[in-house]
Image (cartoon, rainbow, N blue to C red; front, top):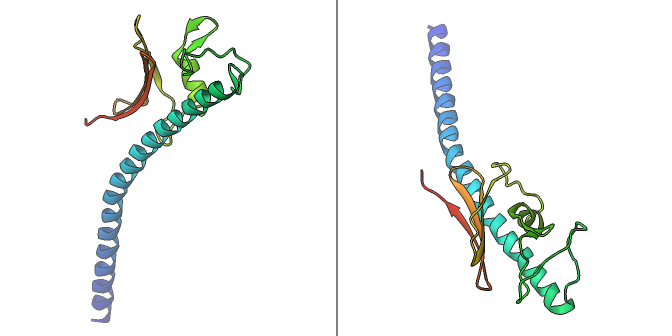
Length: 151
């Protein structure tokens, strides 16, 4: 009889622990997804902050190079950083100047897509099928958008 009581207690405690672990695991997925969403948004805000810093330096000091590399920096007429490296358009250059880390928490490095045309610079950084960041300079209007796609 004592053996059956211990066994019953063990089964109850074991069941309780399993239920708690399963609840934690299901909650962890939503927490992880929300953290990644936030990391993508924060990365886009940091990129915008860095772009504004380049523009501020340009407006205050002219074409002085504040970049961490020795690459020549090209600016638009209003002071926005242009994605031009070695006299050719380079979305990788834009990313390395605006977000030197390149990687976002839990997502890794992006696949870079140049969507520019004759009237605008437009680079899309695909971090996964779900996360992308668009950086655009169109008619002296600079914008950065974090896109979190529903799949």
